[in-house]
Image (cartoon, rainbow, N blue to C red; front, side, top):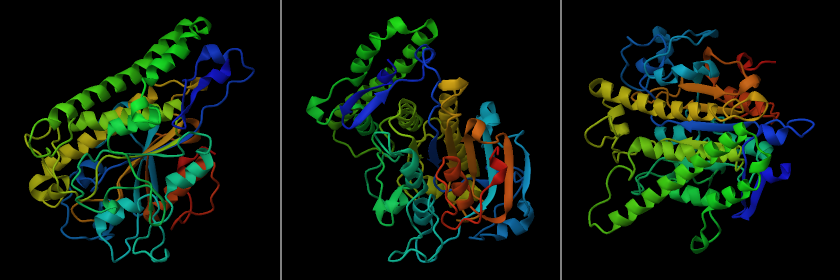
Length: 448
């Protein structure tokens, strides 16, 4: 019966696997461990430092691109320090309920390679950060990104070795691909992200042809019905919750499709915001990512909450009464500080929503999906107004027994961000000696 955990094979090269169930595991000599996964939640244009970083609430942000001068102003300890992550800053406040399962990591830097745009480089090179001027034939320090290196090791048995999600609903092609993607197979070889929830849903769950599209959830439930007699009460409840979540996504997809059909009949310019309210749109894409990780469709995902330097405005539902450009606000920080703090808090709420959702999904041996996933929040800029590449805002959540959590780790000045990527790769079993411009691993994260 355990082979029924993986079924619906042959549908667009994908399958949907069932969640871990104690009834099915009871007859096995040993319960198989859950896969260890990795996901990245990327936030564009940095953050407002005084709202995110501990100890900077009263700091006045200096003008200009000051780089490492920021640390000389005394806002960060130049030496390594590790403390308990207790009192969260205003921007991080949405994480309060789950702070015991994350680490705030500050003080990590990236080196900017002169000759390309600041915003484009900070997004496209975020997960590669190659040593400057070492990649031949390109102006970008862009190499094969971390997600694909890790997927080479843990993604060979999943239908999708990686999945790339983007919450940029605009269609105006405002900027180049370097502003809107963080995942790359290699230099000049983009791993294109999917922006449309319907397209992602069809990629994950539909048949090969649109005209042959069927309701995958009906097939799943039909197969599941044959197993009900073997399941205990708790597992039947778990089944109901699992498939209700898939049904919920399907219903949202149908509403979105109906809305697009109706809007196509009206002659007006494309609105500046997504068809769904901004928060609902991000969470819907996040729900799709969580289901993909939970069901075994992939073990590696990237999630870009928005593009870099895209001046077309968004309607941030519940925040402002008219569409706003995140990038333009970042360059008027002295006048729009309160509005920018609201945007940072809004993005953190979306990250917190996904963390809590993942932590409520039970897997084998008393663990949760979050326990079995390294899920990192981060940005390629330490501050959007000064374009600084040092002291990046990084939060690393999950990891269960593999990782020490509940810490604020302030790295010594000049620590490469690649040290974290090297640490994560090795935690996931890749076994690298170095990655990009790394100078070592972060031992304060590991339990052994």
